[in-house]
Image (tube, rainbow, N blue to C red; front, side, top):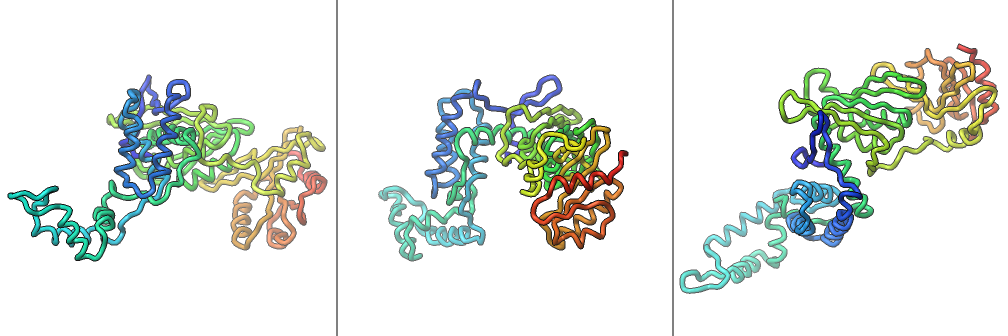
Length: 403
């Protein structure tokens, strides 16, 4: 991510508008991005300072490019690379030794004359001989503990210039979220992914159902319960790329500005054209789920319609998104959770979750080896060997009366 100092934004009628590069207004940036990537791809062994200088050279004649935008590009490129670092203080020790040896020859000059007799090249050669190492190697390590002189050893990079520009656009929104004091997401799809990444970002949440198949998630951080803090703004920023990768959402964040007491709004939705570097969530978690959905099809069966992850159950900070929801034409619903891949730890966690939500109408589909363990739970279950059969599920659904 970028740092707060690299954030670029405009303010308009109570809204914050993070810097964004578009094809219409900034089409020349695609060529710039390709050149920047080439600098880093061919820059193995060069220092951070040299690489940054080369990137600034790309924009030497570009009038529409503030210095912070260039610095932001450098930060994103640096984050995609690996630099050689001095972690054991060797550079400082080498510096002390070299400077001690050179003290008697001070001052050094390029070419000796009557006043200054110590030539830089000759003194370096003498130090090199005493240390038993070529000067080029000494020079490389002399300031290896200074960030500007870290040398690039590997560059994973971005797929192409467009990917770098897309990452820049998202990173500027993330930087704007550093000052966020609240984040609300309205979602109609990918509930499980949204909640999973919110948990990874250590965001606390409240959930309200806003209609059939739609939920409102309000996120904040653990520290917000105790006092006002900016820390969880960074957690919201970490969460953003995962949200962008999802479908069917819109968000509203309240962002505190540097001007004390003033807040502005940041609004986004899944149709705004931002592209995440994270892959979109898969529609199914397993082949068992995917094959069952394919067999069921899009049509109703015995009055039942199948919906993928259409319900969110929550109890305080415990959240459960069943794999499927069966909606009957008379209005009542039954949830289904598939227990396939299993370990003792996985089964124990699943059992605890199901006990938490035991008051809901949940049909379990359990792979045969795990059936004896899960059988401890009350309720209906379908046991399957390798594939979950539609007719077996329909038979079990008959045991759930209309609510």
